[in-house]
Length: 531
Image 1 (cartoon, helix red, strand yellow):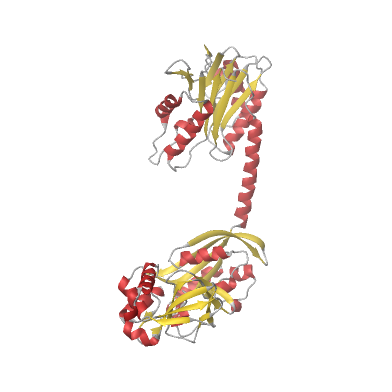
Image 2 (cartoon, one colour):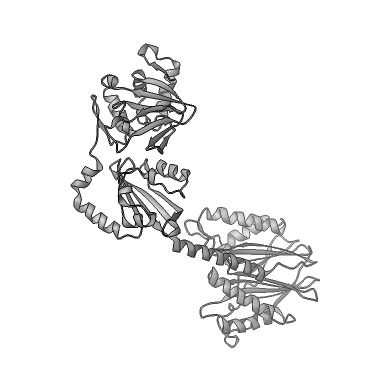
């Protein structure tokens, strides 16, 4: 049973005033004045329908417009839901003002109650141009209404008849495409599908053309996906997404789905839906993803953990550019309690650079540990100059620290190292006259690496980093640079090592402000006298 009342001008009470305001705020009536919404309410019936009741069936009440006020209404064709309306101001369906449809369509209430505003033929003349303007906007400007009755615009078939040569060219091209292509009218009815669509779905053409696209919905596509598509395309925007689909003839495939409104001015004339099979690309991507996961795990095991040292505290920050890293950290504690540490940066980034780090790690693990830092770099260069492909190299900074605080180091083309003294306000720069990077030339063509020694005091921090830190860029391509790094370290010198690295990661992230990371970013802090 429904409750109905007619909104007389003299009875325009507070409740109806609020209803007019709600309609005017809706997306449908947003372009119209408050007075237009008032006129619609004054010359309308407001009806409450209980759950399961039919608001109307096409053919019963032509030239009557129905607008949703509250609740949810299903649009059903051939016992299948093709649309769901739940926003204030939604027109229940175009069929209420169109003389015919391919098959009967019904508007059925889904929620407990749905409140609907209806405007019948006898009130059209009273509303005049205001009603014409509202209805024309509701139907996406596809319907031209007179005060006597609603008329169709030129249907898609008439448009295509005037452009037969373009249609033939489109069909010839589309039939040769490997992608699934579907051509729809403004109401979602199928006008054309290509051969690939029929092959992949198992349909025959007579079971597709003329049907609403919702009747052909893929079971692998969720309700949310269809609702998302509908929300986007009715606004004249293109939808793009990636979905998995079970083809009856081709098995499981992955495809990109693109639904594009074809516009004439601000009006949607047609829709083109294209589903491109990307199964091979997706399988390749998954394999590359698995390979990358394996590479990351392999590199993690190869680097190992920094050994626990009674007289040192070590912490590190690693932000690879693409999963695996071209930045290298090698740490070892020998039987005499001497700590060996190598920090390096291979050319490039990604898998190629990661392979160089594997070669270096393998070479370092087999070297005589009793040698000094400069001789270790000397031996490492000899191996790499014979092993690495041309134009590939790695910079490196080698450190040895003893339990009594003697720091020995040598630099092979790497960034200088900051020594943050516990009892001083300034920094010491270590290795600011680096030697040649490793692997470029054999030893006979380069100068020996320079060996340096100094005494650490308890609380001193050694800060090592790769150039990914200083080369982080803004949108304007301004680099973070050494000066900002010095300012940052000065500001945070008294914090614990792991806190300094946490703050540095945040600082670099905010500095880049969404700009893509250009290189691997790594930093490490070794603090003496804290173990």
